[in-house]
Length: 309
View 1 (spheres, rainbow, N blue to C red):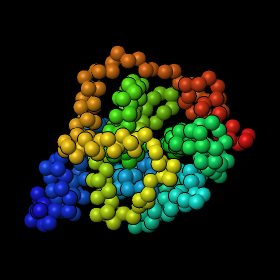
View 2: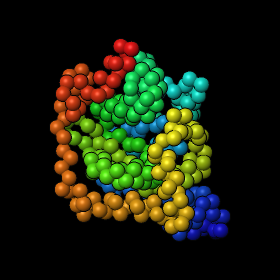
View 3: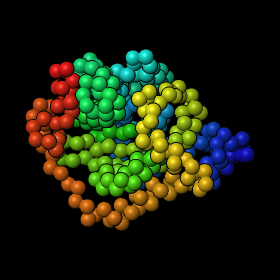
View 4: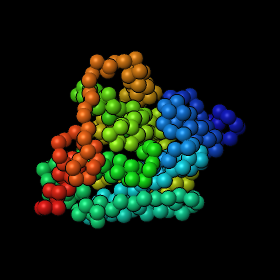
């Protein structure tokens, strides 16, 4: 099969787009499409300071690489969750990020070491509390959201960018739709706007790329990344939802993309306008971050308990 744009051999065939491309034109397509998505959803401009949450995986490193090529002021943030006991996952992740940076000049990385700063790895914190019955997923999410917003605010960044791809977004959308979690559905999208209460804008420039496309970009660009999933992700509901969506995709090409895009169109047409999901945010009396709780935020309550135990 030949590339649609030249006579070279195609390295990828994207059936949902009816598009086969060679290596160079595929990389070009990813970069140009990302720039188009950033503009379409009004994510940020060349004047903005972008904080990219990098994990060492294919999506976040590919995103950082694309923003670097597009000329954005994009710094990285790595949150070391301390998931190393028997796995070496966090240590390997940081090594992949440092290797990525070594071949690209002028990149800056902020590292937050959770065990050193807050007193314990997230898996140990999960065991010390009732959250997740020893599985750290909920604590991990709470901790990462808190740290991303804090670092962005303190560092003067305009926006936090994450590498969530279409498979991620469609799986979350399916889960939220099955349970009709209107609050989550209202907030889901390529952009979560900033608030006057101190929440920094969050964006997902890769939200319309299939996972195989971001993986192909990383491989063809020579990006070495952590291939294994987090060891605690086994049995996660989102993985099950991804499997369901993969089956749908096999029978109907483009099913994931259509599912996500029609959801965004429905939001634009006001399907959730009647849902009043507004909440009042106040500063946490300890850390100062916005919270819906009176007094301490959930993050401070959690980690105070971990340190006490």
